[in-house]
Length: 417
Image 1 (cartoon, helix red, strand yellow):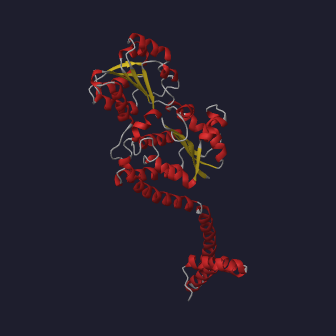
Image 2 (tube, one colour):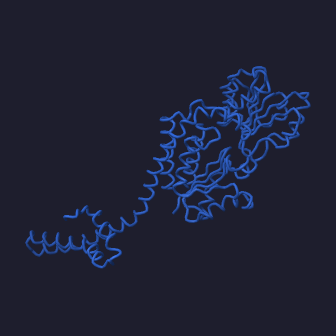
Image 3 (cartoon, rainbow, N blue to C red):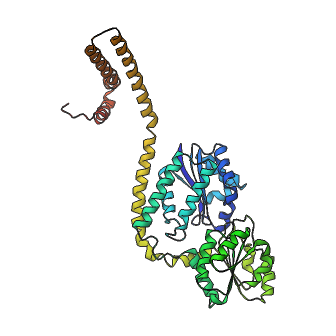
């Protein structure tokens, strides 16, 4: 059984490709059970965020597991194969550690990915696809990520996606305090953005969500007003800044809706940040005059401004990760000898039992206990040493030197012995 990680991320695939193979929270259980149920993997976890879709699995059929991704999304394999990375065994372990530590993120050192990975593990547990190997992998992954974040400055001077969105908005509007902001969605990404924008004291804040209760909960925290998604057509024109991030498989804001809003606004500029994957805003909206539309990939340049201060911590983090990888790989390799150890113990136990029964029969007949114990110990010694002694005697000249070295190591023998 092989540990394997494969998928695409913001470094290997554009947004247009990433959104085609994203998994929504609602369908995650079905996807996990399908991957394991069809025999492509024995155990599996799927991590799907705006920047990546990755599968961690144990499998005897790596090619079948990788092929499952395009088949599940009903896509020609050739359409996504150029963007997919496949990382077996040690490489998969290192990748998991780097992802959780924020070293593989668009925002170097960002902490949100760790929470997303923990959520992916919880979903795999609920779906019944998190087995012994992946449980151990992620247990160690979270431990290494904690060490990286507490022992290095990887998170210092962090420029988040939320902070980048605020910075972009301030390029369009002289003062956010004079603008009306609409947040679509109520998940973690929207919460982060809402906190950053709310700190600028905007004129008005609205939170739109499919579930009104969740919208109201967030609105209370940022002194905003809550609405449902059904009210969006009438509300878009009333806002200057829109930040959206939902799990909808289809766009929330279409070109027609935005065009009507622009007419009502008499072509005052509309700033939109679409953080969703798949995208919440139709791509044609970017072609409209007076619309400034940014996606997660567009925020990358703004985010890079804060990287220099954290680059020095990367080397320290990589040392911690490398040590963790070596330890986990050693554990995986040791698991490979478990069946042999179990068979060896079973073999010895059968021999012990046979001699023990013989000794008990002798004692029952009234034989001298001292002689019975002497016979028992002698018989066990001969049986336990018979196989290695015979192997040494029958070894060829080519085999003998390596075998002698192995026997010396196993029994801690010295040359004088």
